[in-house]
Length: 281
Image 1 (cartoon, rainbow, N blue to C red):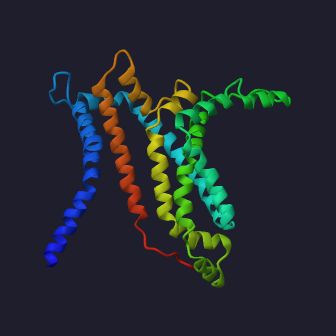
Image 2: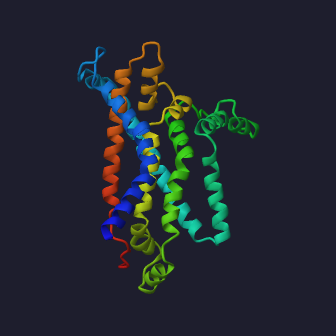
């Protein structure tokens, strides 16, 4: 009887999960396989490493993409963590309002948000018009590295706030009270209790910001200068330019996937910590 029930459960699980497996095969596994085939094949369908070797010419762009993504991720973390901590100390009604304002930008398409942001920061945009109206000179806010980083932070900040807030809001208040009774200051409570307990949320937020940042292309193309191209811009150029080169684009995509995979593996190792925080001063 037990074997029959287990068999029914297993068949039921397979039936329920079948749509997901079909979806993953059609839209994830097969496309990735096609990309890998293009990355390691020449124009005649033979195996070659020349596509990967040609990526040495784009080493500067790859390093720039990593650097910009790390900067954007660190800035979003520095903004999101104290913001989440303050929101968690508000009343429940105020927390719902704050979360609504955090999630509202996520309802708008990234391309639309970036276009509107670039219009505001343009030389004749609303920001410079306001500065000129009060007697200040116009600022060069666009077509530079700072604009690209700001665009990433602006677009991806909610993806850092939400996982951190979700974990932080579930911390038992009695742990903080116990830490205070043991003589911990506010800074010590954050360092010894809150930070260890929110590490999974931090890791999730870093992944959710770093992955789209390192693969972005519209933000850097719209808000950056000619020297701010990233991997995504190169891939798009290799596909849509007149002299398109799909094998090189596939090789760049393979390197990008490898970077993302390695980053996720490293971050997941840091998230495997014991629950609970130390309350020693």
